Amino acid sequence: MSILSGRPSDLNAVDLFAGAGGLALGLEAAGFTSRGLVEFNRHACATLRLNSDSFKLHTGWPVFETDARSFDYRRLGTNIDLLAAGAPCQPFSLGGKHLGNGDERNMFPEVFRAIRALRPKVVLLENVRGLARQSFRPYFNYVLAQLALPHIPPDTGESWLEHLQRLQRAEHPARASAEHRYDVRWRSLSSADYGVPQNRQRVFIVAFRRDLELLWDFPPGTHSEDRLIFDQHVSGEYWSRNRLEPRPPGDRVLNRIRRLQNEAPNGDAWQTLREAIAGLPEPVDGVESPHQTFHRGIPGAKLYKGHTGNDLDKPSKTIKAGDHGNPGGEHIILRDDGSIRYMTVRECARIQAFPDDYLFSGSRSEVMRQIGNAVPVTLATSIATSIHDVLTGTACVSSGTWALTNSYQIRVIDGG
Image (tube, rainbow, N blue to C red):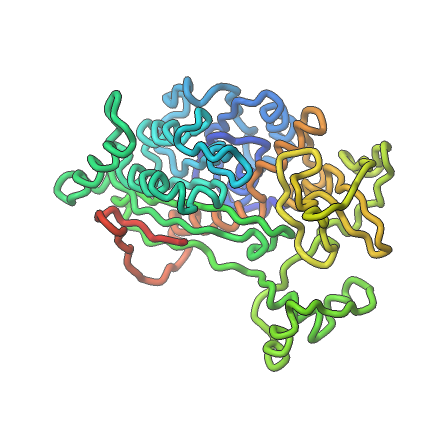
């Protein structure tokens, strides 16, 4: 299983907080060549190096194992086409301590330092959906404002609120040239809508340097739950292609089935967990599969209230950065015979769209952290391809206008 498409590499990218390389794989598949992958965790860096030559169509990945706060961006050269960054999400995660901008792990200041140093044509940021929730929304608006005017850094001792007010005053068109301004769009995307077998919601922010005068928008989803419901409970094609007897629908979808009986939805069906792990041998507890790396069965799966596991005929719940997931049973499979088991590391990697021969370094806990924190490769490829095609003039984007935020004129599309 390989996601690399063989597209010509005519643009370059820098990947900040690269992790296990999910975003890097997507950038590569879209036609970007890496100028550098910056990552602090030594196990994640080892993972990147293990796969550098095997999954590169061009030159090996240049991995910089260092703290982003001390990295000198002059090492990466000039004329950067794309800066991608998946800053640590724990400060804004629904499952974290909710410290947000007050969390010492908040790395957005380093993202903006990188933008000021590199002046990339495009910036691509990814983070948890919690970043845009109401309690963090003021700081999220500050992130958008600083991304629009990254050449104006905070002064020493200046609070982010004071800096935001200064950014708002500086937004007047006469005070910032186009080459120092970015047009910003953001949206909360569901990975399942892009062919990833997982219900994973993440916020993506994309900013184009204004002097390029390019219009871009997020690529539309290619897959839908409606099409899955149609294939399962109207045409029955889902059961046929998976060689199964039809299963009765749940009460939740009965009204949608009635609506869908007259016309098949466009596009493809959400990919299900069953389809995602098809072809992998049934894992044996405590024994590594002789046919597939990282495919060892894990004993001890349990269900309890609020920890219900995964239905094989739906997309997986969100793969998380922990051995067995969090309450909700994210990493438990409900078998057809009613028994349960934990997903293997390889199954979790498949659900995140990593190729089957992609290698990982570290203990099981460390590898699951890498996989759970990654951007699903398929989704990364879709977004990066749309950016690549607009930069190279191979995509035709319909005309439109940039929206205005509530209280200042930084051009931002609100994707909430």
